[in-house]
Length: 131
Image (cartoon, rainbow, N blue to C red; front, side, top):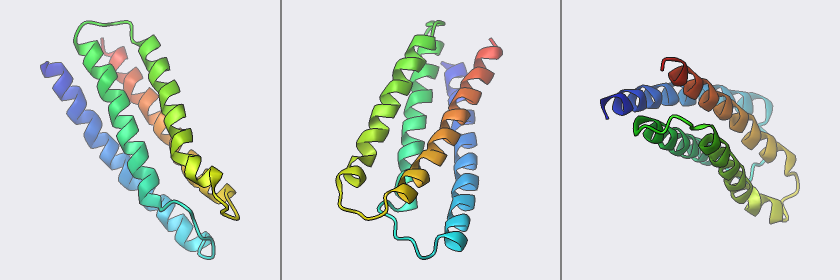
């Protein structure tokens, strides 16, 4: 369990760092290049969703790996598929609304989505290579 805890704390610190940097850049770009656009979702809600989902996905895989389940590829694929479904559910109010311009909100959501997905894969690959 000590290995689980060390990996988890390391991951959470890295996740907070990545989130602060990416959120800061994203907010800066929106404040300079998208002042006139009204967004359906506030930026903090999008990042909160990504941080929570990424934390749950990594923690689940880390826990299973720490308990002796070395074959985690199928678990990763199932959790990634679940993450996609949750992303669609998150965007459903926007997609079903009468909101005029939905494209900026979709881009606002999916650019961090893929950055967090890359971060998850990177973090999982790094700890699996150490084994």
